[in-house]
Length: 331
Image 1 (cartoon, rainbow, N blue to C red):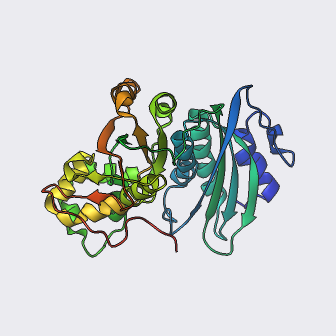
Image 2: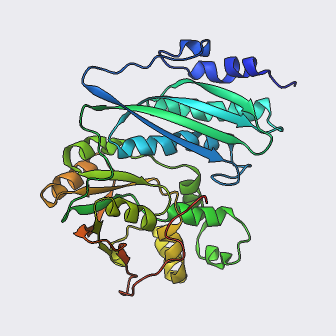
Image 3: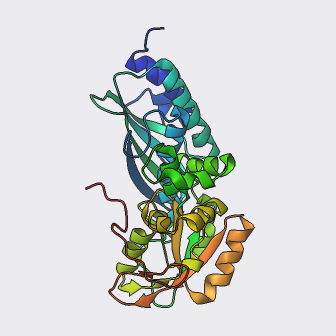
């Protein structure tokens, strides 16, 4: 079957995903409206094959990840998603079947998260597949939850569990030099870790709790240790994190029991897409109760203290940890 033209690709795979104000993707721009008393929140992430995902990952999963990493940013700002635009640079070997799977996954997530496609652009890539998503959300006026508002004695909370995606990436990389630890996992545990890397879970249902109780929040994308450092140092804060306080899945705990050195991968590897937030001690119980009500686990991991030093991390027996690279960096 001959590959579709650019116009046919848009009409066949993406126009059906278009939301209100997108004019069926038949115009040069879209209209995005917000209700009175709301502010627009904008975020953007780019993903490249070989950097953020494997080129042979399922196309529907690639599409979902591209949208979800942006939704995670909106969740950290306590915003409700309302639409996105997509930039897609396709490599030379793309097929109609690949695009059909890609658009199916994208459409299912767009519908499931209430975040319709508003437009975008498709071009040819002379190299790998590249995706760019710009997502829009709304938040009541003056209710956005920013990074730089942590104050002394705030309780530091983390949603979900840390390190699963970084371990999942190692599982996905068959033949890594230290892959012997993978043998301690059963098929279900390996699949769980790999799925956490391939398919993030944006914590959008925490937005009301963040608006009501949090001073500050951010999503964890580049590694817990490095992102926590950025989070706290914006307001001259630091903290101490005990290894016993770090929330781990059963699979990650099993890996760590057999290979303690992988604590660095767990804390610095990135791709968690969990939320990090600072909550006044008087609000901590109410925040945790709200999170439990929407079935999102949250864990208090430390308390913000004045100080210019980076946070101190200790292992499960109290030894101070030192990291070669505290977070993922592109350059």
